[in-house]
Image (cartoon, rainbow, N blue to C red; front, side, top):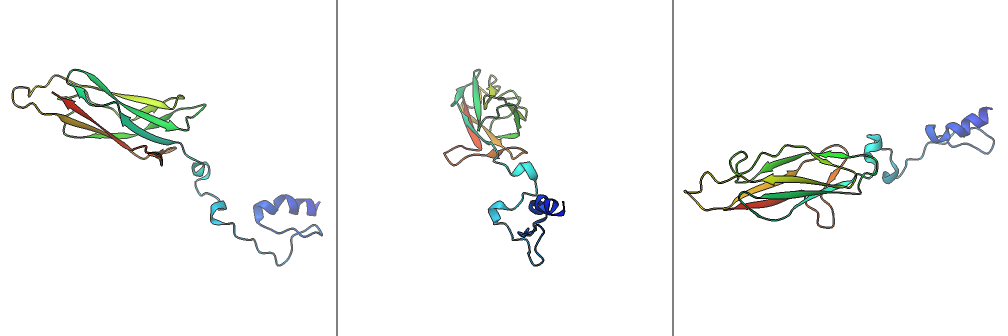
Length: 160
């Protein structure tokens, strides 16, 4: 019974069982290679889905544009909330309806953040374009960007 227990606990204790059935006296646990070290975060060290963003292009005032989020691989039995921040020269509430973080990515692996533009209250003063930049922020359960050209930020110009 003791030998069965020694073999059962060997993976947990790092003991080196001997052919006689127990741990060897001088066996020190061998250090695992760095790639096999246990993760202090547990399941968080598993391969995380990668989230990237792009825009569908510039838009005219009074129209609706969109930012598209893509998560690879898509989660088969769940969804993800992805944090983002908004910046640029356009002003929320003046040039476009405010965007609210986080974005919800469903099982398809895609999400859309709609940008509803407003009529320009400054129309008589200047005929310039204003920018809206959405930047993804780090969060639990996902990584940002990817090696094949995905980005963590996207830009839309609101044109007069």
